[in-house]
Length: 496
Image (cartoon, rainbow, N blue to C red):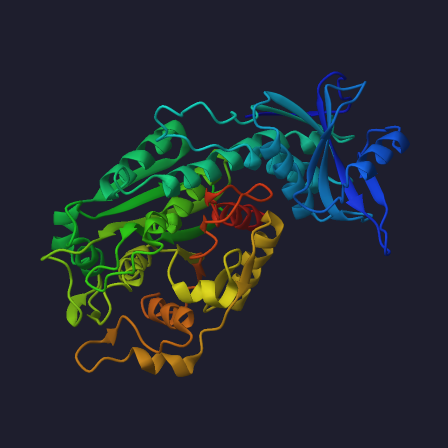
């Protein structure tokens, strides 16, 4: 996608402007065209006649003598300064609604550089289409917008120079996550996931950009003692892998480890899941996709932050070689786990990767990302992810980054009284414990493998990673790309 900032909008094109509503029993409509001055009275009369509301996700198109098309995108309640996420979602809604057009221009309220960035980013994020596996119907859907112009008085400001390139990078790597999540297990398994990331690393510049990639295969995993990844993956014809990406800039201000759950399909193993909804289990590698894409985005932005990214990849299948309930496995580093439930497999592969990542010297923090528990969805719904931590300063920093990126995260506790429920009479611990508060118990399990004194945060993105309802804002149906943008913003903030 091409993104351009301008201080003058050319006529005859498609122009997107904002529409908000005021207060009162019959709230007035308010046109918000940013730095562009328009004659609004006749337009407002037309909008009122059409039943326009100005609410979020509303997009209304009307003909205009000055432009090919005037498009109004809902901003919600009128405000002196609109939240950046409101601008992001409004521009994303418009871009989605205008698929089939090559180029569009935006003139929304942009009183600061962050607002300009939000408009550009939302527009790019809204321009997404996944039709990789369409056959005869491929091409019947409207193609995404390919060029966006943002009208703003900051267009010639030196501080705004990086906004278009950043928006493009954020869009590109969010789409990488979405594409991987949307790819069915018939085409995405541990080996093909590795191949896709290898290509993405090469496209990002490879070693010239400070990126290196390495992979452990199933024999190496078994020999070296990665019992979690091996135990989960041994029931599948598609063998497991441990993918490692490192980004090392010439001068680094911080060093972080990112770990992402990479279950390319989860049947539940011998604790087989119900058939209803199992098709969405192709999304169970959303955490691995997010941390890989975030690392490449950080490298593309040339941030002075070292990243060590680890993606444990396995397919949790039913077979005569699958791990059985009651089996005991040994996690990398020596701790033993009684596998009471083979469907609580994500924490097993993450445990291996967390211990391995913790061997890196000089880490400032560790963040793992996982579509880990159904309990997350019950607690927080399908749009809000959870954050659990052993370090409040890290949690505060990440939540600030998430808020700036527009992604919804909420802090959750790690209650010590639940830890005893993970005790096992035959191993160091069990992989499940108290059912009530299952999301928190999973976090407590992972904490057992984090190095002492190392700040660590666990992100449970089970619901938000895959949107099974209609598209909204800049979010499509299917893979959403959640956590990628927050991780990038977290790294950007760490540079300050």
